[in-house]
Amino acid sequence: MHLYIHIPYCRQACHYCDFHFSTNLKSKSELIECLCKEIILRKDYLKDKNLQTIYFGGGTPSLLHPQELQTIFECIHQNFRIDPQAEITFEANPEDLSIDYLKELFDFGINRLSIGIQSFSERNLYFLNRNHSLKQSINSVEFAQKVGFNKISLDLIFGIPGYDFTKVKEDLNLFLETGVNHLSTYSLTVEPKTVFGIQKKRGLFQEIDDIEMAKQFEFIIETLANKDFEQYEISNFARNGEISKHNSSYWFQEEYLGIGPSAHSFDGKSRQWNVSSNGNYCQSIVKGVPFFEKEKLEQNELINEFILTRLRTTWGLPLEKLTQMTQAAGLSFPKQEIEQWLEQNYAFIEDNHLKLHRKGKMIADKLSADIFYLSEQ
Ligand code: SF4
Image (cartoon, rainbow, N blue to C red):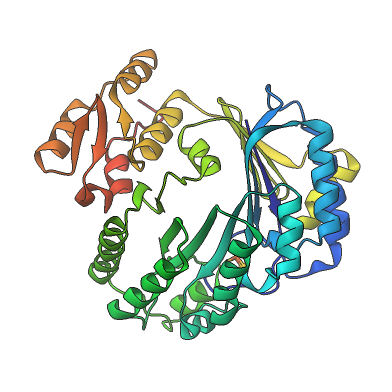
């Protein structure tokens, strides 16, 4: 079973970000109390109390003071059992990772760090409105390694306007120099409610074209492959088997409990999502009124999600399971489409699993959408 805790605060808003967070930290103590209350309220959501992974995401979990983190861990320990081998991941921003703070994190049993580097270019950090410098990025990784974290993941964004192919190469080289074994990399997407989204609406933001974007991504895939990284999910690369167990649990439709404003939960049949407002979340928890919405997933939605997530992974889409699922739902198997993908060299079959070639990975979500089952079927 898996636990996600959302820490909904950031120092400043990055220009591309549409996650839920607030830059007003005044309510932080009250919110932490509410997170603990929610853990108690929902401790029976997961039938099994043994946690295999815990993930602190956000927002910026590294804005938590060690004392606040201790409060949350005590609450988790009182209500769940943490598997001795559990993966405990903590998202952090480089500017927060001093040696002392990292030691505190290590002592709490946190054994995986996900550091939001985003770019090794000062120009890009400024452009994206990140709150850290290149020096802080390099220091944060070195400090974490020094303190003893041997599972570290970095995030990098590509497809940033004004940042050409050779710069992506420099970014990637700096990543490789860190010796870190996990990278999550995403193309810059412009969401409507972000600063970039508003600039785009006013004609002040020019995205890079799809061909250049694809070229950059292919270069990243190729370079990392040459350095023994496996692209185990479209956006995630790992070396020495250091995959993210927590994120993999989402792709394998395992059950998870999400705590905090905007956090989602999944119990195998329904999805539940908490209100995306720190104020409303706390008020509702305190008053004992609902703070989430819930929907039971239809058979076709479960199958669509199964196709979408599995196709994005290196393990592929298990065809026997898909046959069973479609038969049980009275839906037709997408035989024709799959044959086309094989013919067009987008995919191949290995051990009865449908897997994507690189060409297919570039358009994985589109391929999945082509065989999605509509609710009326
Ligand atoms: S990208 Fe991360 S640090 Fe920046 S605003 Fe979003 S959640 Fe906060």
